[in-house]
Amino acid sequence: MNMTVAGEAPLEDVGGVDLVFDVIGGDIQRRSAGLIRAGGVLVTVVGPAEARPAGGLAIDFVVESDRAQLGEIVRRVRDGRLRTNIGTIATLDDAVAVLDPTERLRGKTIIRMRS
Image (cartoon, rainbow, N blue to C red; front, side):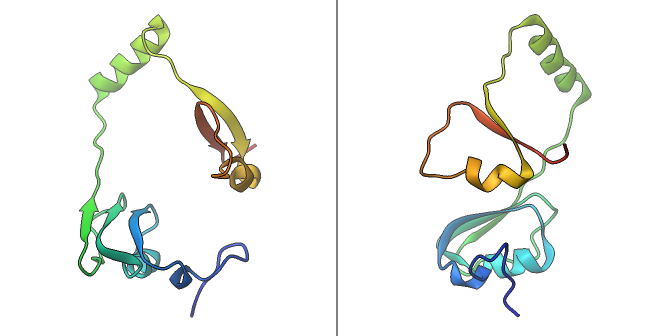
């Protein structure tokens, strides 16, 4: 069965891609791995890759929090030594329009999941 997202073309209709950044895993990861062209990369943050792209590379990306480093980031923000560059804050409903690749936005875009 070909699943679609919000009326878009089925995932399998995308064609060969260079990179998939997987944040879901499972069936979506397996299907996505099949879309990656030779030499492409599957990066997953949900644990060891269950699927590997044919002729490509699978990377398990893990970030381990370090309390001391996180505390230092907070201190730098409070001291003004580290500044954020937030350009736009949008709701999840407006995410597609805000992230339109035809328009260049300044700063980072934050998608608010809840109101």
